[in-house]
Image (cartoon, rainbow over all chains, first blue to last red; front, side, top):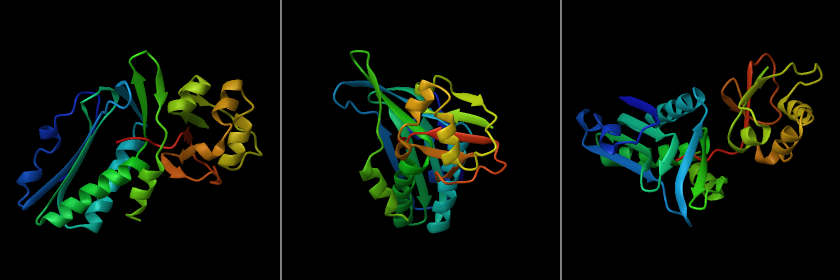
Length: 146
Length: 83
């Protein structure tokens, strides 16, 4: 099972991960990224590249399947305005034993951060907004999987 | 060629996409950026620091020296920040 979804509506973690526990494996692992109140941020806004974003996420899932013994994987990512406290992304993986699902989940979120075309803007209470800069720490984590 | 822009690049230029007949001497993305930077003050602002730009040709990430060839769509955007 491979699932990629770009959502303009709030993400339900349960719906994002639906089916992963029904694949006959003994392990489901997941990561949820949440919009964070960084120094007065009230909401973030996410832009994507329709078509390329979906294909780049599916390519990451294909690569995870090639590297680990997976039964399923899912990536669900919000676009548009996301209030602080709401999920931005949910990544999940299912496998027979936990190591494959755990490592694949880390791989998927680390590589999503550097490879998938999304751009994040922070909105502040005073009405100002700023595009978020890419972080070198994200590059470091992503390159672990090279 | 169809040009598409995202995030701060889109905002600086003021449009999300445009179609341009690039001059014959424009062979790679580097050439295209140099030519596009002369089209308006917004383009110049968006493209002033090439090291802070990323590119995709027909929706595949490519480096600055990639040859345009017969690609239909060039996307220009800042480093990605999803997740």
